[in-house]
Length: 216
Length: 216
DNA sequence: TAGATTGTTAATCGATTAACAATC
DNA sequence: TAGATTGTTAATCGATTAACAATC
Image (cartoon, rainbow over all chains, first blue to last red; front, side, top):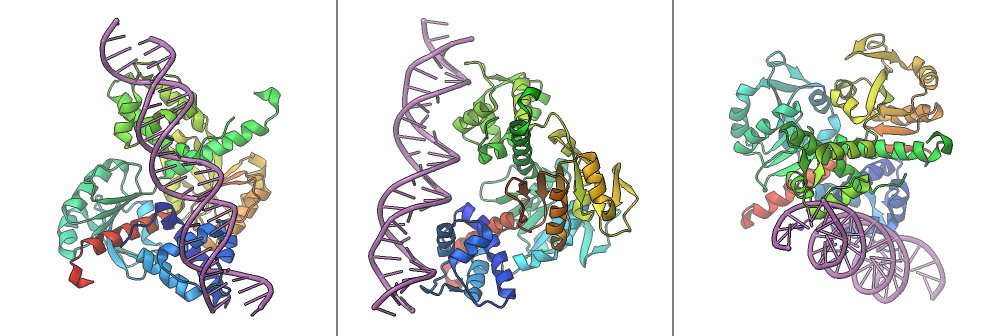
């Protein structure tokens, strides 16, 4: 299974979203140009990205939407669903537990854990919430290999260690902590600071560059 | 004010985090090499990125930590705090309202809004929650120009339009919707799908490539 | 057939890394 | 002074865009 450039992977969900939308309108086929218009990605870029999925179109016609959806979903492995554990049932954790789209993206949270015992024993959106004492036992018993961390920053590294010790091979990290883990472990960070940095700077540039000269 | 490459901007908060940490240990100066080790970024990359902030170091010594912190914060405009509005007080919205780090990153949520009237009139973490009926009035009156959208996907575009009509110039968008707005509006998306796509594929590659041949 | 769209190869662009002179 | 680190220029690398032959 060849590796696909990260930037291509990040664009694939955008295409997928567009394809779902177009499909709903009743259209059966679509061209790279059309996808390009809807996603603001260069036409040639779309063609190259789609090529990575292995899908083959027909000249003059384009691609069958269903074929494309299938190819992309397959490529991301979003058509079969992996079980995962979530640790940290704060607001962010709850938000993820309630995010129903997740199952359409190949991920299902089958259990949540929290250090504070108050939440323990209850259910949220059908997902059971356990105390951390149950964590390692359930993790190794259920052979789950994907973990989501939505704890406070202080707890993140420790939780990550526990996960890896008990068979997790991939971690979706929502804390700002840079996790130190064996290189073979797959870590994806949701980096809000990076995003905010871009926003802040762009705003600063805009305000600075459009402000009257004499104010500076 | 020159524009800085996006990829550089996204790395700056990482450096900043490392600098805070190092400062706590009592160290006063730091070299690019040291930052590189802590952040897993190439040494030369760090030097180039720091050059964008305009900071100047001294050969053989490095940089004073305080100077660097200052330069980066200034660069991101994180030392003066901008007010912003948040719309959509679901779990994700609440998570952000409780995220105290935000004010250390130049952003303060001074009011939150929600379409559901239940939440209206109360406070969360000291932030007042209003109904949407108050939105445009307060927005234009308080001259807020940054908006955060944490609504359900369906509402995102409409909320964005309202924001822009009432003076918002930058939107931090936590929904998966691609907002259609005038080009001069600054939009930063927190794109969970993109992140999940990378994670999913890497897991698929790993499982496929390490699985016994005869299972495939 | 003619024209549009595909897939692919070549050119360009930007970002990363390497090399090196300047200097404390 | 010698050595380490800076800032910057040059080389490399990878990703994006342009060009074009193949084909339905």
